[in-house]
Picture 1: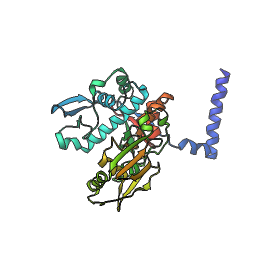
Picture 2: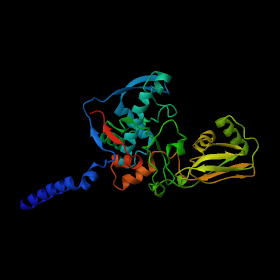
Picture 3: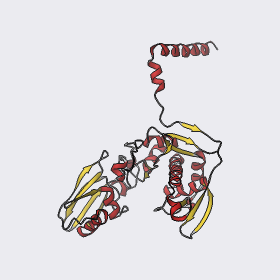
Length: 319
């Protein structure tokens, strides 16, 4: 009992000293990244979902919908903490996009099952692991200055994540909450993400540049990276006399083939253009293989989200 009293008196004395010096007070005022703010008064919302395969429109609880998204976006056998981090971002993506009303303009619904229109959805893959991940983060979304963030994620960052400008050529608004970090994902990812090669004819690349920019680079014998971003990705690429964004060229050529803009080599060989690199995806925000690695090291879902985003609040918006 006496030991406890001494500890309490010590704490009180520390606080009094801090009040007189101001040093500890300043340390205490430093914001803690990613606080969880509980607000469980609201009931779980239902959303309207357009099923693209059948044309059906149905009402579904958002948590049930998020389970279908998580099951589509990640390997359902992965650590539950990684799946739960994905659930937080999928929930945030859903709420942010419902607010913009993009799918409402297309189908008159809040969301759709099309990955091109909204996000991937595979309810048939839902298992106990997914259900646990969704339940443990129920209602949690990510906010920056009380607004939903752009909840970007990708498969494998190739060793380092990217800014939105670098990885997505996104300049519409500032995204200061996106971090550039290393996460060790290459240690555990599949071989095709560690190193890949993609080849296209010069004519295919020429057409891709024309499709992206509206300008024909003409016949060319050289292609090079004109600018690299903070993570080393090809932010700008010069094809002949034309310069375009790396992300735009990747999309025009096929993002499943040109797996990322984390390029180690880019050159013309005869009548072929050779891309060689690592990673899979745009590299912005949460890296799914990195989340897997962080979960294996004992990180909680909220810790994983905070690893990839900064100055954010993770808030529980419904009970």
